[in-house]
Amino acid sequence: MTTRLGLTLPQMKQYDLGRDVPDVARAAEAIGYDSLWVFERALFPDPPTQGLYGIEGLAWPEGYRGVADPLVTLTLAAAVTGRAELGTSVLVAPLHVPFQLAKALASLDAASGGRVVAGFGSGWSLDEYAAASPRPFEERGQSLDEVIGVCRAVWGPDPVVYDGTLTRIASAAVGPKPARPIPILLAANTGKARRRLVDHADGWMPIGMGVEQLTAQWTQLQDLAAERGRTDPLRTVLRTNPRYTPKAYAGDDRQPFQGGVDQIVEDLVAHAEVGLDEIFLDLQSSVRDAQELKDVAAEVYEAARAAGV
Image (cartoon, rainbow, N blue to C red; front, side, top):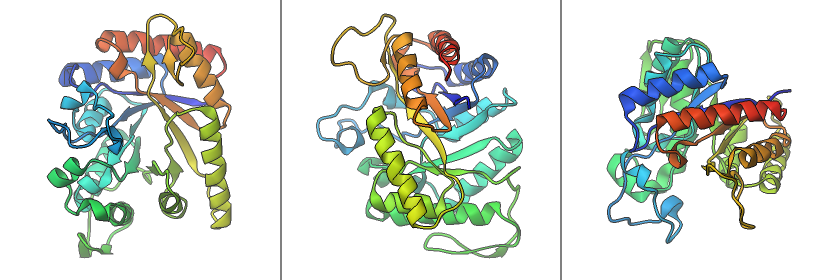
């Protein structure tokens, strides 16, 4: 079975939101990409108080100084496309008021004809939590649980009833409803997060860090699903963050998805063999502008399909 391929939309500082997002979205769908993706970065601490991902000493990319809102970006893409799915990878769910997030996602799904995929994560930035989250960082797991619960309730039949910490709905009609059940995917990489995924989500969103690590994580997740009695299949969508270079990377220290188009496609082939449903590429940080993003995306797509991905 052919692996679905997706592309991340241009959200970073170097892009023109109103011009480049619709342009790239149209082009990606015309090239053949199955899905369009966005991520969330609420702010850029200056000076930094934490390393990227909470790793001490790891610098934040300059492109993170102005990341466009993910749902606004997807709405721009939805208006100019008709086939590609519209996914978040990831939306830092606890930074949002659960009810408002559920209603926004339902509205976007209804408007786009049932194309939204809700990829959620719990986040790691203390500064983002201080600025935006209605609950403290220490409660991020419980916050994510409530977001999932509220989404399921709001997207389901009326009357909607929910009794949580932030959200209390006694009995109400809430619309519009999604065009179809919106899949919830989680970027789970700890034991508790994986249990949440198996018990309450529709799928898994790993990051392409190498075939061996990916295979081991996927095996562990499948074993956990069997152990907890899950019978529904888990949808799997792999995020890759290629570091594209016009020429092949010649060093012995090449990382997965680093280098020229042929090297990126070589890694796509290897990761596709793990058996995941979909792989998408976030090329936006390693190209100059939207035109180069479209050109490289087209070259990668054609080469990947020719290689059997």
